[in-house]
Image (cartoon, rainbow, N blue to C red):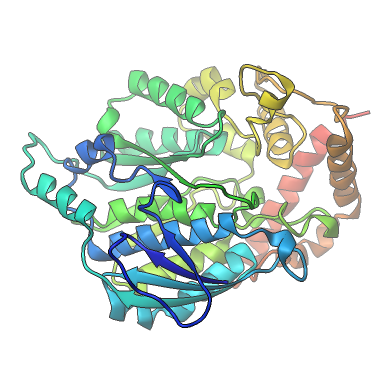
Length: 433
């Protein structure tokens, strides 16, 4: 598929072969909120305007995510792998051409597709020029002194990550959230932000919340969503004068994304925070000359261990039911539910249930189905999980951790987190009758 990516209607770039023209600044094709009035009001509190590389990261990720959404995997020869030729305009052409192969390799691994990126030079858009002018005319009493940026999804892991980061350096953390079009995510993010405002000396200027969506999206696997999510944070990080740490809180078991059975190697095995993917992203960032260090503080902790080692257990305990871990929190709308809730039987839900069980906390989370009796999907999920548990062997854990991607170092530590994670998972599943 040939996709000519554009940022304005005035861009007259074409190619000889058949292509789709895709303009993320055309409201009929795409919607995103990076330049919203609310966002710009917060951007002026940062030490610098977004760098050229930061802007390029942002738009590359928007184009990639859009291409991911508008192309149906079922139309391909194997009902999964798509082949893309993306013609993308960038501000720093030479730097991106020098790192083109690494970017393609990273995207190939992340989405399971074949990406070929062809860069071309561009100038600033009118939107960028207006935002830069507003930034130049800014009047702020005190710039934000940011030492860390923390991804904030509204899930349990990200909430623990936020608590731990704020306990360490309350005034120096910037939080970045992304929300989709459905219900069940932003509501939890907003609720948790309100709780954090009351507990810590943080304010609204430290929380950035972005939306991005392709109009008429066909494909729901959207493995590239994480790249788009992270690139919003990377763009913001380029406005900071000093080296910045980008925290991506995720428990080690989910991070490894080891399929419990061979039948779950496809869309059910995402690679959002896999060490191999994050290593490639870190290398790309460094090669592009950015002083951003990516870190998952919980790479070698289970979700239960994260709860037990949280730096403010009492605050977490009071608010744990206000976090959302479910992979599809808005599905209840089709059942006539007015409030989003956890399904109870998807893998993130089961890992959450296992973690809270391990912590000893009373679980006040509302689950739609904790016994896997709500239908065929729940039954298939349960059978898959149990088959994975029954096939799992501690002595071959060091091999299992390689299933979703190559692990180059700390094999024993990754194997141990897998073992402890599976044991944690087994505690809750073996109670189901």
